[in-house]
Length: 365
Image (cartoon, rainbow, N blue to C red):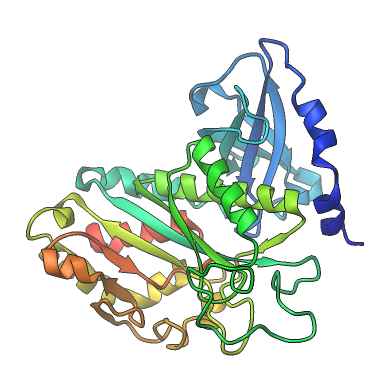
């Protein structure tokens, strides 16, 4: 039996006996959450505070061993956690908190995978435009052996077609995890907007937003943490690989919906078209920012097939899911709204994605 199987089979009723014990009135468990040196992995550890923090600025700076998270050498391993966003803890409940953190090195410079630092500066520069984002996070559930959850062990499920937004045990795999994650996000205060089963069986999507500025990255990263924790309780693995199964199967993306105040107002389609024109001239720059491996992960997904554009070419169109940028049909009809950038990969860093969109579409840099 693997570690994942053991985790899923532990008796949660036994754990509940301890989790219902009352904490002393002044003690609060704060789970510090951060991004590791891969730019994709999430780490966390818990700290007891003597009060209930209402703002991340009230939580103390903490440190950890960066040599064990691919972020430092053992001879100089301390890294600093600077709290930047705070959420309710759906696992411990009550007054306990989840604390999302920025990572800084020994010399107080941001870690290489700390994309939030520069993103925040760009969002401050563009805040008068009131930028809104919504990201559609696709992911795939895997069994303990790395095979898609619910798939036959010695074969494949039927071809894609009946699974998208599907209903029924022969079409949907892992709904319990999806429902638990949704409720955990709502409890935590994450701006989750919806969810659905995706085109490939065992693949799902949840949407986060609308979020203004830097909060898009904060809420998506925390939603990812919650998904990993929920799946851990079920003994199921989550992957954000943008092409988890080779062949005639859909990949996984993180489509980014974006607008400014001017785009959302009457006649905003002109602002949308202006933004698309600016983004078209910076296609390679965006592709580099849209996955942690500077486009290498997305190469397997952006092939021009399976509802994707080609990674080599920029395109835009109304209601076209095979384009780099899609203008929703209702937006074209109304003459205002938002655009959807379909290029970001499922394992993207939302800070990097939203930063480059603002840089090109708004600041024209």
